Length: 522
Image (tube, rainbow, N blue to C red; front, side):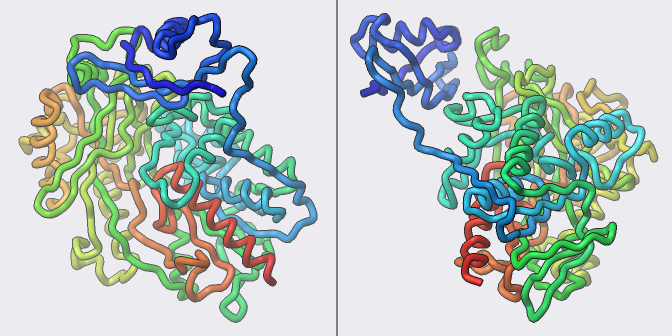
């Protein structure tokens, strides 16, 4: 049977397949010619000891042996005439819910407010050039959802709710690089993820499912506290006894729709802050403890967290070799996010630095909105950023990192990856105090962990406000249905039960399983 061994190599050794073979053979006490294939099971980088090392777990296939069978399978069925279930949203939760329904023999009808990938890319190009924004086709909405252009970070700490490796395997099945199966922090890349998403939608359609773009849901059909279907803005109606709500955390109008239908919502904790960008070479120097990372090491990452005045302040969605992008969906609100292409070869490294916000932290003036108080406050902060950008569409307010910490206006700004452009603004002044002051304190503490992090070369850009949803749509723990509406299945980030691509995909799959159980009983 295949031999599994662990190796610790230099970056150069781990870069070359023949050297991996040589060291693996030596450790297994074999000659290299006895090994017919090597499969990497796990890969990580350890830079704690001064000089970085690469830790590998590999499986050696010997002469006369066959590869071990895959433990994860994907078995779609033809569901052309099957019982339907509606899915609102074509992000990770919605698409993986659709794939799971197809495996279970049910017909998914996916309604996505945005456009298909080809048209969506055109709208994003217009946004990056600061020409125009389509409120339904942007970095938030469209085929693949917000995850498509937040670069496909698949790592998740949420491993108790489902099979993480299955999600990675389905991504790989649809075109993601094999590395997503073994990297400790798997990453697809914003250049590689769109065709993967298109392959997923193709699978859904080829097996009898439906995906409808430019279909913003505007109404729900409810009879005797049970879902019967929904209607879209253009007057179309769709009928089903199960509706999976996977609309994402930026679809604020869905919360308003539920509120108008008197469907219970709950406030929940979330986080907001800014995005910080450094030269990647500086982050490499700090993290790898060397002047330059060379050709064999990837762009260095970091993850930082501190408790400041009773609230967590932490880095979010760190993008090595990445870009900052305009992630809002309205002209009067500035929202930023980060992404990286698969090679992570930009000259910049960026990360959100956000503050934990609990429902009781929301200022009194927003409490009148009840369960939507956090949402209204989130929108208020985004509008503050929009009012402090010189009235230049999606140009973002910015400040040098050291100026932000010291509370002074920046005379000039360093180069940035943010394509619509930046303008000097006193972010420290207009950002709500309980957010801005905690970030200022945290940055000083971060610099103690990563000496050199607090630098004049780095830039703060506002605001990072969509790291998580300020609203939760309640659901029964066992059935995953809304407690008051039979057949309504909230899932994914917008429903408040996941964060990130993989956990949202798992949540979508779980909701699909519960919806199938329900539909098969009625």
